[in-house]
Amino acid sequence: MIKVLFVCQGNICRSPLAEGIFDELVKEQGLSKRLACDSAGISGEHAGQQPDSRSIQVAKEYGIKLNHESRPVNLHDFEYFDYIIPMDIMNQTDLIRLRNQSVSPRCQIIMMRKFDPAGESIEVVDPYEYDYEAFVEVYNILYRSIIYFIEYLKDEYSL
Image 1 (cartoon, rainbow, N blue to C red):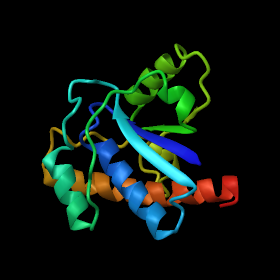
Image 2 (image 1 turned 60 degrees about the vertical axis):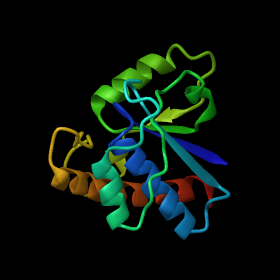
Image 3 (image 1 turned 45 degrees about the horizontal axis):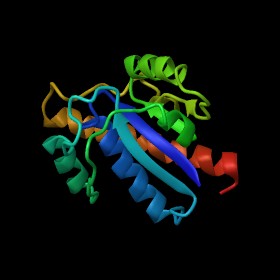
Image 4 (image 1 turned 120 degrees about the vertical axis):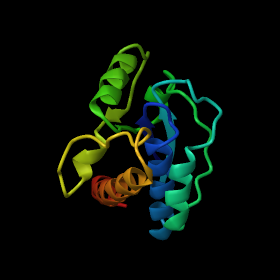
């Protein structure tokens, strides 16, 4: 089983949306026994909360149900997951710092937009302070990126 962790700042906007998209695409492709994911936040400030209502709404519009409670990244994540996927440079920097504290990290840390064929930026901008349209744009970026990320995993592991 290949395990992926999507990470953003608070685990209520981008990363739960990425988790929902990934899960849906994995199911559609019949890869649920080979690929699994979760999401977490750098910050624990929203721990135990459901995703932002705008993330829930945009996911619902595309037929995806988000079922996640926010949690912070912990040191065990670096030993458990094969891939940790940050949404922005600040998340990546924090993850690298935390990975260095882990006893036996095994994961690769790869930016989400590395897999975006549009390649307009290396970051998935946090939509939290913006309107609903920003969440729609984040959904589109994540969907594109995750399609190519799954293709990468299929090639890498001959799935």
